[in-house]
Image 1 (tube, rainbow, N blue to C red):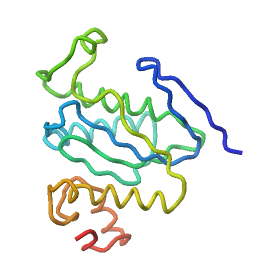
Image 2: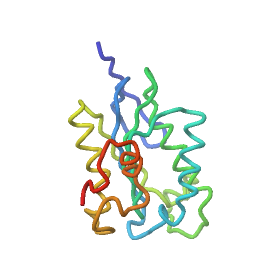
Image 3: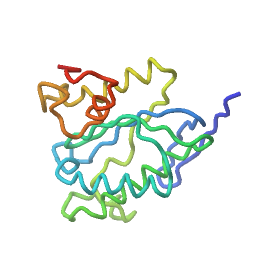
Length: 175
């Protein structure tokens, strides 16, 4: 029987459905959608993911980093449902390495927050293998959808390259 638990994130008072053993699709977005902080500071974002994975393990099944947002699929260890903590740590680690200067409203200043990320992120528990495959394809095609490249393989910040190297997808996928 699948145990479903609901937790309340302390800082945001936001309820999230947490399903043990589930794979998750996420979208995380910068506060300023016209920014290119993620790709301009990709090394800091990679550091943030590596640091969090060392202390709170998870597997990145697929990922794409665009200038102002990212999409990813994670698999957490069996019985572990704490992706909100992981996102909090990734966002704060990245933010600590970015020079200050972004707009920061009174509410964020009061809470000691930066104004780099949107407070929330989108999560979707993947139901089955076709749902997982649909979201992997969505991730890998996203740079084409947003007009950054004509072929998905031309976007450098995508797990598509790993899928191609492993022979999971052909080199001309999404062309």
